[in-house]
Image (cartoon, rainbow, N blue to C red):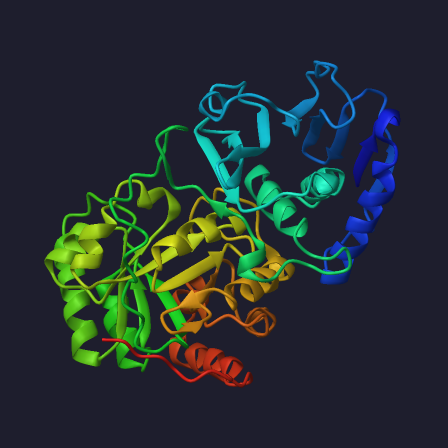
Amino acid sequence: MTKILIPADCIELTGIVQQCLLRANQQGFIVDGIELGVSPTHTILVAKHNGTIGLLADLYTDLAPCESQDYLSSYVLSYNSTIPLSHCSEQAINTVCLAVRDGNRYLDIWHHPLTNETRALYFDSVNEANNTHHLAWVTTLFALDFPLEDCLTLARAMSNVSRETWAHDYRQFPTPVIEDSRLGIKVGWGVNQHKIQFKTVTDRNLGLYPVVDSVDWVERLLQLGVKTIQLRIKNPDQEDLEQQIKRTIELGRQYGAQVFINDYWKLAIEHGAYGVHLGQEDLEQSNLKLLYDAGIRLGLSTHGYYELLRIVQIAPSYIALGHIFATTTKQMPSEPQGLVRLALYQKLINSIPYVDDVGVPTVAIGGIDLTNASNVWQCGVSSLAVVRAITLSPEPQSVIQAFNHVMATRAHSKELSYVE
């Protein structure tokens, strides 16, 4: 059970939150377990099973936040801030500066709850009359278990659509700031995001995408007809690491397959890999300019709206969306996304430019097996990434055939793209 408690001094917000919950329900979110009530303080409270989030907005009060040891986290939402842009990143770590004017555009600025690094979104226009609706959406999205960065990203997009619809179009969303010295934002990706487009995958419908941990599995699956595969070796100190990567790349050429190397981008460049896959945490340690110059295709992991909109600025070859269901194959930084969010991400991605078309190829990953593959595939993704569903099966070939049958059930309306 989740409770949204609204202070009496902004009780009109209750009706707007109800409207937001209705629209979320129309998209498929489960809202039956969310109750609305009155907050005993002047702080908006979102009480969930894992703790309470406190939200204080200067739209209705100038009182200081109430101190409480019961808060999982608390945020001060500053809509009326007169703080100069250069000082926004110096504010308290729980302060969110909203719609800060920056020349001909506006910025939402906050600190990441775990790393304290400054993050920001920019957008072209703002209607102050929509501030109350923005606050209602931030509140609602917290209740739906979105993290802070996604609450702010989606709430801003929802301010740009009519009150009966959901934001799906790329142009309705704000853009995450990836470089701004004034705010101390520098992602360190080592690339000019405005001048590149990573090479596209040979086949935009990537199909079944096994992720395996040894060259033996790579060779075995290529022999069974798999055309897209990833080598993910978790231990960087593995004695034969380079030999496994080199042999995997050679096998990819031999079988004419789309073979991606997870993480070890320097070795991938050295041995001429077809592609590299990087997680969000790997991006900070990599040099995308070197990968681009080497002509290597790039796949990137994302875990929500903010990360998705951040990485499309460097035009990757595909976007991985996950984790969809609970998984035991690796430690995950986020909660399972589920099918409703996956379908919404896919609709957004379908509007994003990709070379001379729209719709970046996507890979759904995380806990996917034959019991749920059909539902995932119907969300519109380009590929299903699987790990244990194949590697733990006594008959991998029959599993591959079953997955291919699932993915043959949806007609693709777009022609395949090929860019050399």
